[in-house]
Length: 136
Ligand code: HEM
Image 1 (cartoon, rainbow, N blue to C red):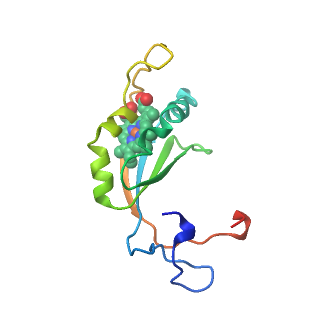
Image 2 (cartoon, protein in one colour):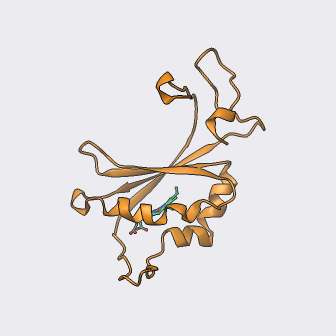
């Protein structure tokens, strides 16, 4: 559900994120610790897999956030229609494909696992506000 379709329940400029059908998006953040010396390799790997999750039922989108300060945690911020959709994806072939280390379509050597550590954070959107600079 795109943010624009959301109903405004608060005052001017403050919107409570409840979609028209009454359901609420849930946010699952995978915080992956990537040592600085690995550079942008993790970004390249995500770019190569970006479409892998698009068809999962209830999937609403993701962003990979790269740290621009001294932190080493990259954040995969994923949005889902509900908890069940996320759990279904986690156990699915689609999730396995997104994390597979098989060969590439171009016959290059398969990418080796990067040996990363990660932790999963669960959030809901409490308040949203769209700035005038967004062009909306
Ligand atoms: C909240 C949902 C997610 C969870 C819980 C999760 C889990 C993980 C974990 C535990 C790692 C680090 C260990 C490893 O290398 O396998 C990782 C890395 C990675 N994930 Fe995810 N992930 C999520 C979402 C996604 C999505 C949406 C994509 C892209 C379609 C994706 C693609 C990748 C890629 C490319 C890596 C880099 C690892 C490598 O190639 O070695 N992940 N993920």
